[in-house]
Image 1 (cartoon, rainbow, N blue to C red):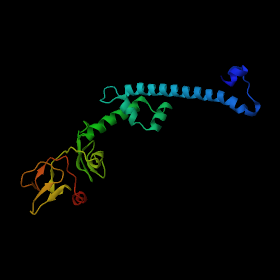
Image 2: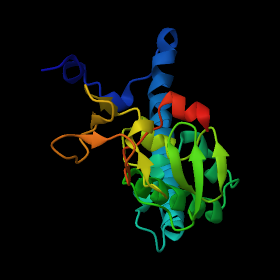
Image 3: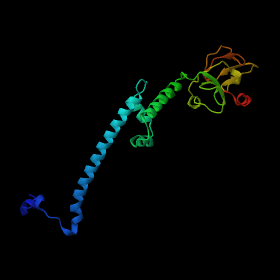
Image 4: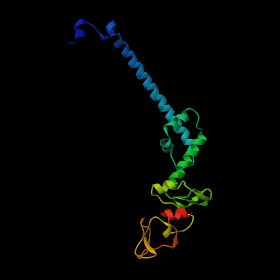
Length: 205
């Protein structure tokens, strides 16, 4: 039997003591904190739902889900969206760029990349404009060791992956591209998505 039962005291009849008044107030404060936390959680859930609903419109017709787009957003992007500084049109553009980036990682050329350009680090590339560039969107593929579609044929002698053997013109591909038993002839031109210009070739462009 507890001391409350012995003395006939119930929790509801206990009065807070002045020397421990903070404890009595703490119960109410904890309750308020719980209410605030629950309210904040509900607001967060509602905001997340609204964001996904907006992203559904942005993803319409694209091969990507609203959740995938949300995961790609930075925290400050989400804050800006909640603040109303990012439009659905901007989100749609972002979603489209994610789809494009994913396809480019797979070595696929975007439909509007119709011009031939030359990147100092990637070599001949497809682009939306022609000319010489120091860097390009395909550099992401290069650093990730992904294939790069080519607008023209290339020579093994100009590639950093060409490993010469004891022969003035023959060698092998360090990336394992198909070759004859004797190897690859350095000046032969062929299509290769693994080509990367040697430093000497890059300096000559």
